[in-house]
Length: 408
Image 1 (cartoon, rainbow, N blue to C red):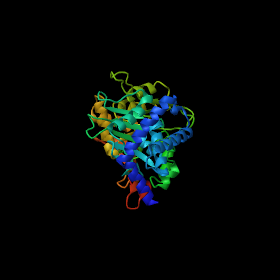
Image 2 (image 1 turned 45 degrees about the vertical axis):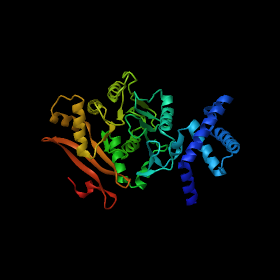
Image 3 (image 1 turned 90 degrees about the vertical axis):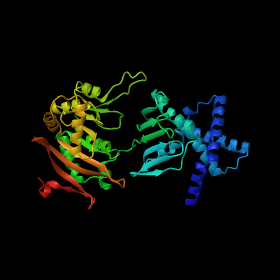
Image 4 (image 1 turned 60 degrees about the vertical axis):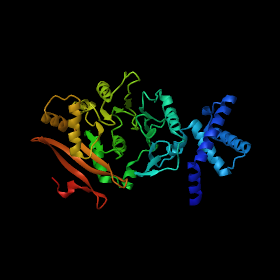
């Protein structure tokens, strides 16, 4: 079995296969155009049967040295070229894949269980990669070219996509896809994976119900959004929730949820709707709670103001390497946003706004762990008092309840 898989991967990566697939692709496009067939309107099963039949006919007529298994592989890959996202369609469909990164036509990597690995797929050339990017962008009315060489977008399932092409990308077009899980991780999943203990979840659930303002922090890929989505489920059903995100990832099952999404500027640099615009507008929409997917810019001041003015129980995430770093980053973002007061005044704002900081992280081996839960206290001198309530013990790969250990 192993040798069969290896042979298939070698065949798929070969220049001969790529050339054959390109010729077959062009042949099928001409055939579909001649017959007036809109294959995108067919079901996946009907499209697959039609393509398989046409591939067999093409192989026979061209007298190609291709066996049945290779013909079926050609049919699947060609179908993905016609109605999907080409060589990466199977990776998009694979639920075990969290991230997909394309570094030019010859290098495709995926992240599985927190670890990057090379995949046995490739594109024909730079133009092939750009064609797939344009297929992603087409339904969104967006474009990518030399005048607009960078773009953020998302797939129909909500997965986030970033693409950048030459002349900015020197080694060819690059695509980064952050997959959107069809089934978000549950409390049981996180406990089973040892990402968090049930004691911590019970504590945080109580804090959510009591309308504590919570900041979830961590690095890229640490699971901030996943954890925010989890604790948001504990908000009582009778409360009105407004979510604000760059790309809608949160999935709340409450009856009264209003989802808002930012909008990038158009080609003329106009009509942008920022997170700050949406936070300000949300305050006029009678929210019980505001959930911001991630604070990363000048919306920080409006978010802190919302937490300070009757919207208790609000939540957000922030890129930071630890609770103290998070406070410093909030101060930095507030400065960029035009805060005119002194540092002590800003610390009082942060102290009044935040109740809890939850730090999550991805370890070097790909495992994700909740590292710390800290209570935000008062401003003492020139610093903000913080009390660690729970901490991750790497040696025991478990969590310690510092409240029961007499921690101050």
